[in-house]
Structure formats: structure tokens, C-alpha cells
Image (cartoon, rainbow, N blue to C red; front, side, top):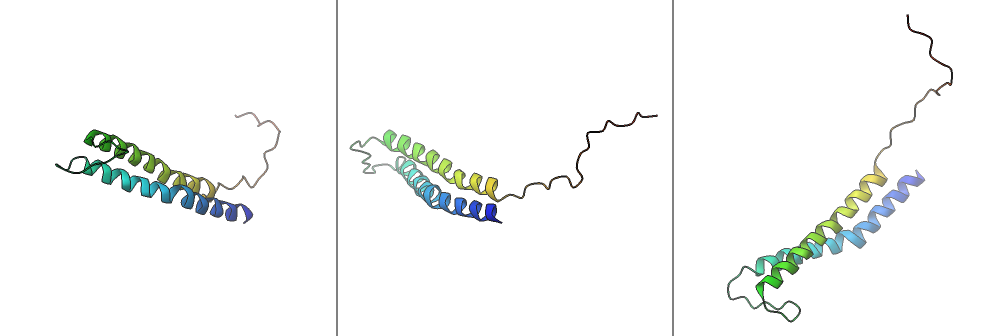
Length: 100
């Protein structure tokens, strides 16, 4: 049960440190990309008012956010999955008898 508790703690920590910022980055990226298509919008991305800058920044933030959202899913899957049970009978080193 100790490994299960450690896996649960690892999943919660990765959700807080990767999942939440990833969700915010994905939302920001989607909003910035959509805003680049709005005509006559006042866009200011790092001192640049070009819609292409908003589109590229939004696309990059969205992709990075999706990657950050996937990390807790993978950590949760790897740490919390049930591993297959070991074989109940030990394997002997004796050779198999010849087939007839």
C-alpha cells in the first residue's frame, strides 16, 4: 500500500504543478489565437501589435499547455495502474520431457 500512497501523492503534485498551469496556458493560447482573427482588435503581445504574433504565441502556448496537461495523466497512469500478478508457481530449471 506504500507504493500506492506514493503514486497518489505524485499524481496530486503533478496535477498542481503541471496540470493547473497547463490548463491556464491552454486557455490563454486559445484566447490569443482566436483574438488574432478578430478584425480591428487591439492586440498587444509583448509590445508588438501584429496579429501574426498573437497567433504564433497563442499556438505555442496552447501546445505547451496540452503537453503540461498530459504529464499528470501519464504520471497517474504509470503510478496508479495495477501491475500484473507474478506467476504463482515458481519456474523450475528442469528440462521439459520429450514430446511423443
